[in-house]
Length: 361
Image (cartoon, rainbow, N blue to C red; front, side, top):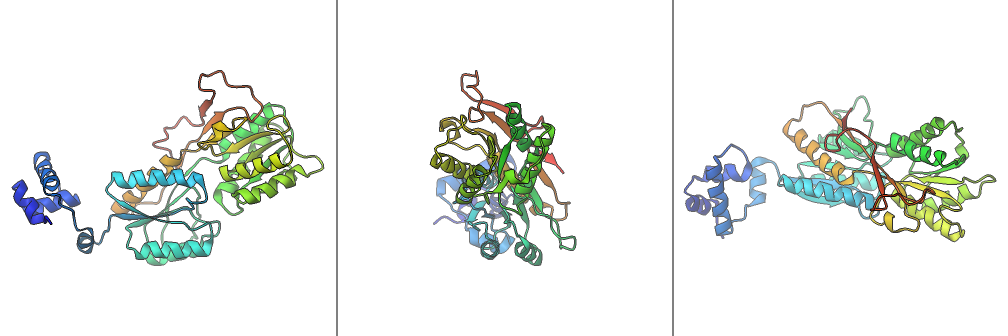
């Protein structure tokens, strides 16, 4: 098995130069760097990551705790995190907290014990135990998708990245109101999540903008998952004056709502118009095709990696919250005719800001 000494001899450089190329610890002339890389390729040299981590106190690995198995939205975020990590030479360790506070605390500790350099976490609705652990051990962490308000006495603040929530939800409600609907229901997410709170706020703002009153009976919590959304949809449809249109708060709840509508023999949009927060790969395959808010899922994941690496490089910098814009994807489940575009889908960016930069708060 080739060693760094072999690589250095083959490239005609010192072992220290090989080390600088491998670890990016000092600038190396381009032709020298290329000679080292050519030697590594020719000899089939594989760096000893464990030995290197003992010297540098870095493992070049990132821990990711998201419910990727149960939620397709987080699967796309996972792809963005993985691509961003690999781009910068980092490996990825994945754990699924199942949106359960106790399990979340356990898996985060397990990732930390694997000596990851930092964590990216989609926090649960009750992250107190998580915050205590991260604060006690001073673990560099970025929260994604769901924002967390750390206590004032917490040892440090956290970087965070998410999509805009309120304005896109208001856009969906406003669109349904423009279609003539006056009773618009909402299948909201799990109470306590920032995404749930912000989307409810957007729902109320959309109603107010259309001159419609807020009726709490038209809001039912689907707890961000399909089965609870089935019950929530059934409750809305069982009202004495049921909604004529409905918005669902995420893709999993959209599936649950559609199941209940099918079981009741109701047709979308003839019996009930439907819009959803979260576009997903097969939304365009439903009949009718789903009008939705599309979140920049992969960019959220990639941005989380960038924030974490910047935090590792500058631990004392002020914490940042980055918000990325969404897009309104206009299809037919809202009751509109097929868009005239060749693709059959009209997509409108809901922000003039570049998705790559987002909004710093």
